Length: 161
Length: 279
Image (cartoon, rainbow over all chains, first blue to last red; front, top):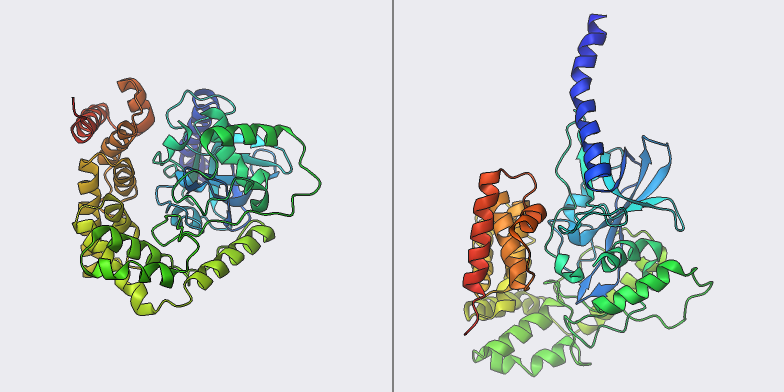
């Protein structure tokens, strides 16, 4: 009994933190919220060019806790703080995501072609909407703590202004 | 902005790479839009709503050639050796424009051995492989010594005040060095110096890179306040105007009110000082 109580005391702050994150994502940031386990290593995808900047992506698959489905997670490389302009490689910060890593995502789900989630990045300070949420990609550590948004750079927001 | 953002966000995975490269060829226009923002919007809106065509056109535009500094390179139909031959004499005599052009061409040959990425899509890898082969062919008559000497020309141009060179210096991280190495620390220090020099002349790219450098802690100690300062300065250098509350909303996440106020003030002052235009 004592062990159960101790476990509850240990877990409850994490649950509260997750609930708070979920509320921020869905209510304030107008996004869809997912947590889950990464099932495929990061892969690069080329993109089109805007003003001489390639809008490439990094993809992983994630098995969601919420519905058990596997989502294609599409992360815009230009929103990574260590993005190197026009590089044909995955930014190191996104490459650090491993199979088995736990992620927390806020973005927009899509179903065209496959089940996935995109727009998991900052919306450059614009008022969030359900199709342009203020999204994020955060790693959840083994202790349950939630890291910084890996998709927070605003250096290339000008491409869409 | 919203539609364009969606375009960037979705492009690469709703459509495989060969499909996304429907834009006009970019190899003839260094650092200019292959897809303008407006064109990108229009294309994307149609593409997202329309069913995917059963077969894609046979003609597939080539990917641009990109140098180690991230710039798209156009050699006007010449290979690197031919391009350099026309400029090297002037570069050696101290012509800064020629020096930068020689650097830029040689930088195209500096990332030939970088591994190709694991890609989402086989067609994407195929196109990247073809692009690398074109790049290799363009660099066929360039020696390792010439690739190495590019850094001499880069520094020459950066010291002479060429803003592109000052930015490129920060893109040329010495790959062979350990981040703990003294020479690496020196490069970090020099890169920050050049970026700040370009930033004082209202160079938005430099200011943006400084914001990221402070955010990631890549060239200097991580400093979220300075990341906000330079983020605001970079945006204002691009003539993006927002209210103080909007700046805070965009850049102030996770900062205290006092830090946010200070960063807002400093960022505005920095941009106003660097970007003052003649009356």
